[in-house]
Every structure is written in structure tokens, then in C-alpha cells.
Length: 133
Image (cartoon, helix red, strand yellow):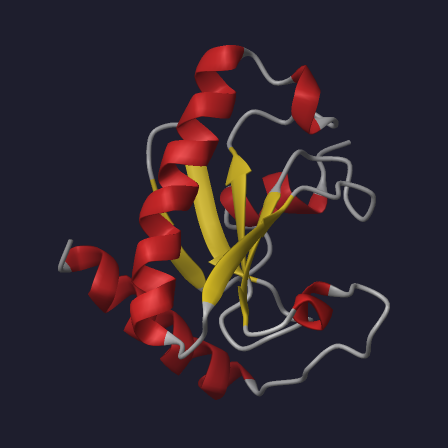
């Protein structure tokens, strides 16, 4: 059975897409820790991040870098954190989370809520920055 992320890649579940490459896909988290919280995933459905082959892992990290540069220009923050937790969905993924303090990446804290139009606007701003790179 495909993971929820595979269903997102295939267009079976809607998302607020940031961008994609031949190997990777990026979209906004719908229950973010911070404004702009983005997930970057390989298109290959592999459960555990460290089971990715080197080529796919490199592709995910290089695409994450590109997304992070656009994200930091879009959302005011000190840094873009990179978190590989991997417990929520059985599909390898990277969380890119704008942060000003270490507590900003505490997954036990309450998640933020945004309307779909608000998420769409955030995603559009990030995509615009990616297109300017």
C-alpha cells in the first residue's frame, strides 16, 4: 500500500507543493511547527532515511539545500533547521523548519494551524524565491 507521501506525489492527495525534481518532491507540512515548515521527500518510497541509496540521499539533500535557501528568504528566521526524524510516515523525509531558537524544532509542542489559502500563499512565496535562484 502506498504511503501518504507517495499518494501526494501521485496527486491522489492534494498538497501545497513547493517544487520537484526527477528524484525529489517538496511541499508544506499541513501541521507545521513554524510558518514555512516544508517536507522534502524522495520520489522512491523507502521507509528509513539511511536505507536510501547514496544517489537518492544526495539528491534529497541537494534539493533540500535549494528549498532551504528560498525558505530563508521567504520566512524571517535565524536558520533553517534540517530534521530527519522519520517516525510519522513510513517514507524517508527531511523537515526544513525555520527557527529562531532550538525550541522551534520541538516536535512535542502544539502545531500551528493555517487555512488552505494561507498555506497556498506561503507556498507561492517560496516557489517564487526558488525560481529566482
